[in-house]
Amino acid sequence: MTATRACSYSELEQDAALRVVIDDVPICVVKDGEGVVHAIGDTCTHGEISLADGFVEGDTVECWAHGSAFSLVTGKPLNLPAFEPVPVYVVEIDGDDVLIDPSVTKEI
Image (tube, rainbow, N blue to C red; front, top):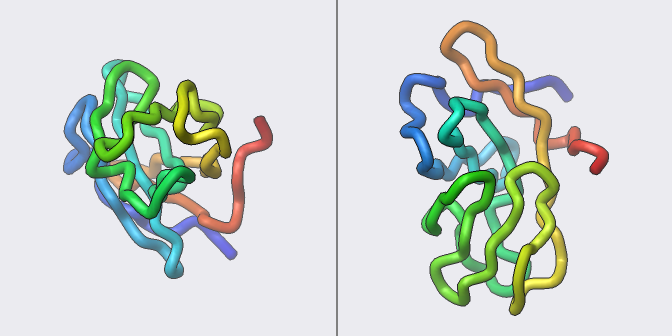
């Protein structure tokens, strides 16, 4: 599989999350305060909650339902009740396009 256009860089708001679905894989895309784009699995591992509906702070996204925060860099939960990580995807920027391949995860 190859990287697919997920969204445009210009439509991403700084320190905010956007939910995209590529090949039936829900992905939480975040442009952090430094302009770096991250892509992690969108489903909180504690419950079936979209992380894109949560709160972005620094290099974390927090699930709005139960408060588990996940690292945008490693996918690891930083506090309970979640204890399982979410996948982290490789992001490519091509012009204004944000490209993600949901079959390729980062080795952390």
